[in-house]
Image (cartoon, rainbow, N blue to C red; front, side, top):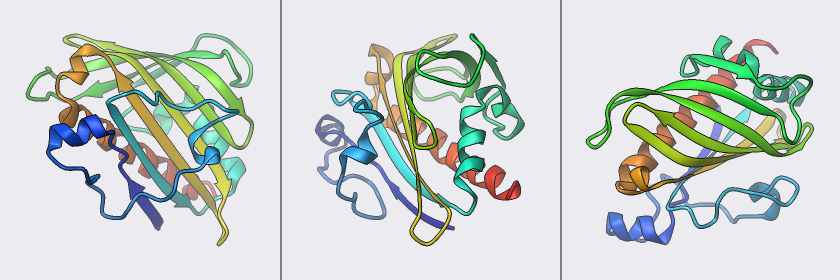
Length: 203
């Protein structure tokens, strides 16, 4: 598995952690407009909670794209997604909405709960990128807005380079930025791993 993982932590987060170095095994690569945007739009640049990661999947781009954008089928390959419902019909596109649920484990400040997330697609470029945003609400836990970017490009050595980046905002999660960032990171790493497993099994 060819993989490079990076954590992008804002200066505000670094101040909380008492360091100005992101806690990543490798240095963060140079950021580019292509990595950070879908049709000119990206995650919330002012958010205190941010995580990004990359993976190269040994599968055709069409397979990876189909798995990621057929949101109604996420529970068939992602154990962390317990349910999904499209709120409109047709292919996923700008303006599409979907509701999905995922468990959130307990933290020192929040109880274990199931989050209900209503996502609206902000931008989509077929076969290349998708950006959605929306609130996540559970018993005792609320994320006012999560903004999630995915980009997909053919890797030079074969396969697909997948980049994902997400930000969270909201008073409750911002009350403990390091814990929220760690929780977001675990979720995204699991998602990438599941996407890799599912795509390569179908190739």
